[in-house]
Image 1: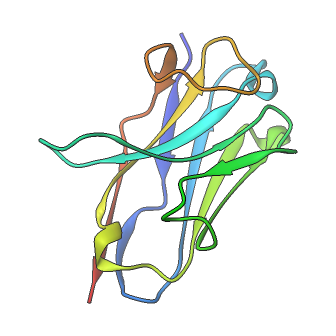
Image 2: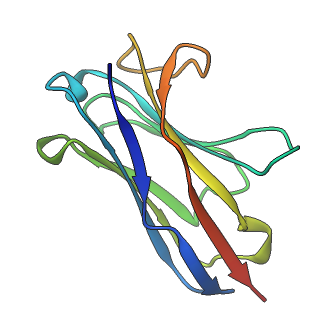
Length: 123
């Protein structure tokens, strides 16, 4: 069983930056794509970004492209989400998901999920 853990959330002011981390167990971490999502209770889950197995390709939801950057360090079994110019609308719980099979795509219904880390942005 793969264990996924997000960290780095907290409370910041609008315009500030924050870096989230997603760590995963397993020696095969470097073979799989990882995606970031956010969700609050009662709301639809929103896709934010994805990075492929070796970090050479990244993909972003248009609303965060240019502000958020996803990267990975496979030697540390960690994926990062650097968030700059944060807005109050970014307040949410952030999750990462590691695909169970693919090195380039993440299927949210076929992935290992973390428990989330909360981000609060005050205006």
